Image (cartoon, rainbow, N blue to C red; front, side, top):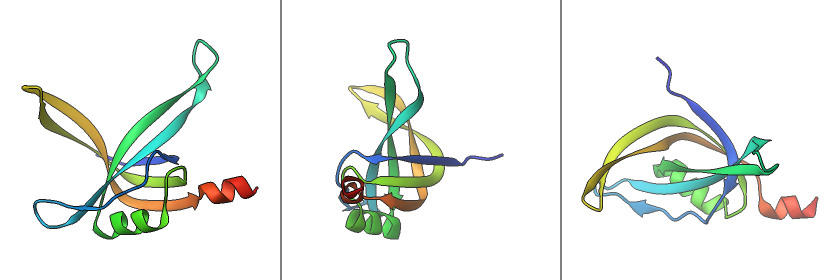
Length: 111
């Protein structure tokens, strides 16, 4: 079996690192990823994907990347059940194994 995902997108917000209940560092990296095709109205839709980064990956991404920067994420899909409004809800998220810094918003404006 294979569970591997590669995504490239822009960060939708600055990243903050928090401590989990078990003591390790964790950050949610939210990516905006435009689709490669137009919808029926002739517009490119965008998908927003939450990726979870731990420890060193979370710290480095928080330190060096900012809202609007382009990053590549390699990871795996994970599902979990959370309780929301008294109902169980299944959510899918990406667990980061590697984040590659591709370009910053500042670099894009300079070109």
